[in-house]
Amino acid sequence: MRIELDQPRCEGHGLCEEVAPDLVHLDDEGELVIDIAEVEAGSNEEHHAQEAVRICPVTALSLK
Amino acid sequence: MDRNYDNIVIVGYGIAGMTAADTLRSHGYQGRLTIVGGEPHEPYSRPALSKAMLADVSTVEPQYLPASDHGAKVLLGSRAVALDLKRNTITLDNGEYIDFDGLVIASGSTAKRFTDHPREFAVRSLDDALRLRTRLHDQPNVVILGGGPLGMEIASGARNIGCAVTLVHRGLPMASHLGPYLGGWCTEAARARGVELIDGRVAEVYAPDSADGPITVCLESGQEVGGDVIVSTIGDAPEGDWLADSGLLTDGRLKVDTRGRVNEHIVAAGDIAWLPTADGHERQPLWTAAIEQAKTASHALLVGDEAPPLNFQSYFWTEQFGLTIRVSGDFPIHGEPEVVARGQKANPDALLLRWNGDAQSAAAVGYRIAIPKLRKVATGDFLPS
Picture (cartoon, chains in turn orange, blue):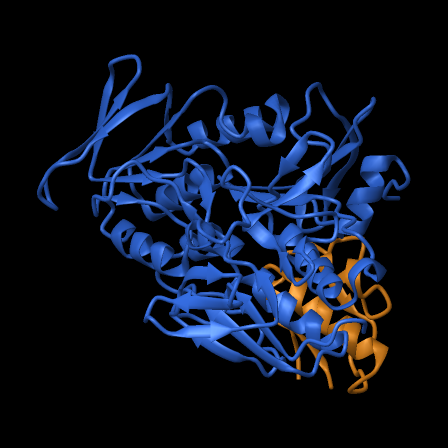
């Protein structure tokens, strides 16, 4: 599965970084960087990715 | 798992209900799951209703939440009207009953309003926001009652659309949420964008008998303010009517413990839940609070005391009159902050602020910083290089 970002929607809240610091982070300019995009179904990473997708208040992230 | 549920029902399908469903599954619950969603829509982002959705009337779509694989039976547009704890059943508004062995109450809240007149708007649901957006498109004169985040965000959106906007609020807008320093900035920005601010309290709203007569707001000072439409942003009331005869309410409040539990097999999360705090039971009607509460409560439903209690750190943000303000820590806060960082590539005016003293508070004004770092700025553990 792959984490995808709808870049124009992202407002840089960074709530995703809080729940999935192993996968994503905001850089010094507040732009979201996806460090690990591919996650294995059923893995811990996938669980973190789901949480990141869920917590985004502007629905900028998806997992496909 | 020390409790064997096989028929859990979630009442409410906002972010709390959705998170509860996901959490139950991620902790291994494989039984029947039914969600009663009062609105006819799939879950959506509620913060966006007064922010992105009003920013541009022509193009912005509702922000539906990403679909989930919780596999629940979802009853959309179906309201719970009663709860019977002797039979463990919920009565729906179509007269049907559903039974349960475990229950998550996440039925949210409704907007308070002065009248039921169609010219008085309140914004709580997606349908509310769509109706208001359609109406604002005709550029009516708008009177907004209440200068909290919702009122100010709607005022900002209405000004962008080209409406004349009057906002009635007792005291300094936004100050009760952010404190006088940032409240002053918001107020100044509102004035600069042409919002007429009236410092006063509403005594009464006179609605005409017909749908098209003038609607008038009478202030305690005797001043009368009229407009084509009125938007009331005077707070929300928990959606607890359906629990009235259940025996679960104390003084009309659905109180939960530190794990979101109402009793052994009923938990609650989101805007309806009153949580224990140092100052008594309080609600935390915030996006991130609803998510954290739903995670904690649904975990506790399955495993009881083995679930960690709620450890919530507040996060709040608002977008109004060109200002994007995010705060972490203790708010409202008094006094002047120090500027700990200034300017980013995308916004040279961006500011990162920190208040020193007993309170630990930080604010990012137009400054993009991840919330974990903003929390550390508040506690003095991080400074951007």
